Image (cartoon, rainbow, N blue to C red; front, side):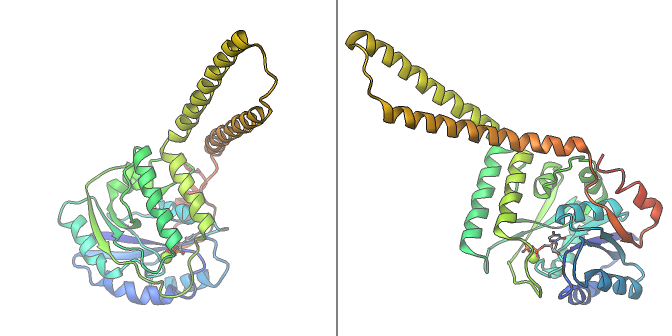
Length: 323
Ligand code: UDP
Ligand code: MG
């Protein structure tokens, strides 16, 4: 009998958690020849989420849970779940039922019977999402696929079922700045894609503001590409070339026609442009340096406050950090 664990990252999900459990649990129990269970990861929720999870664990003895000491973000919650998992197959699903649970049997079948290593979901449309957010997301996928070595499917979600070897590969990536969409695609393996429609949250509201998504996109680009550094190098080369050509032109002009004292506006413009370019390049370098700084500090990705998984597992998982 194969085992399957579904990781559910939860941050302030009191409104939806019971509905989620009542909907998904029968689906997991109906899987043929597979013993399935949940790992709930409470990402430092400030509402009643952790109490609801405790109650679920009381009722259903197969439920494992981890509760963080504060909000560490969905990336950390998924990592904690993956590290705590022991099953042959591991899935990840959002708590808000936006990830169609009726896909689970098909997804499990493709890893269990059809020889795939990953069954992952991709949404086909962005209905019910703000226009600006959709346009921004589409632009982001185009850009990151052009400049990075990870090929990220547009609309790819964290909703997936993976075999143990994929999970081990993901855990073995030691970075502190985790951009899962990139990591999932970077590790490779045979993937089967499942398309499904975007749907409204069953209850509660989204935890992602526009700026949080923007920061996430920057993380993805910096984490999987060095193109921004090359772009600033390129801009530097182009502007200094223009400067040299202009200097040559001025020397020749002065020799032929004598000096002129005009040129105040062009001076101001070039100072502003060059100054701006220098600051932008420094900012780009700074983004990389700050990430190097965070990596070198080697802090753990999360701190566990409470869990019903054996304590010896916790010590060597969270406190050893990410290395
Ligand atoms: N989530 C989390 N930590 C966070 C933000 C979100 O664990 O800091 C969880 C959240 O509880 C949900 C999933 O990640 O299960 C997706 O979040 P959400 O539905 O808010 O994002 P959206 O679907 O709007 O992209
Ligand atoms: Mg959601």
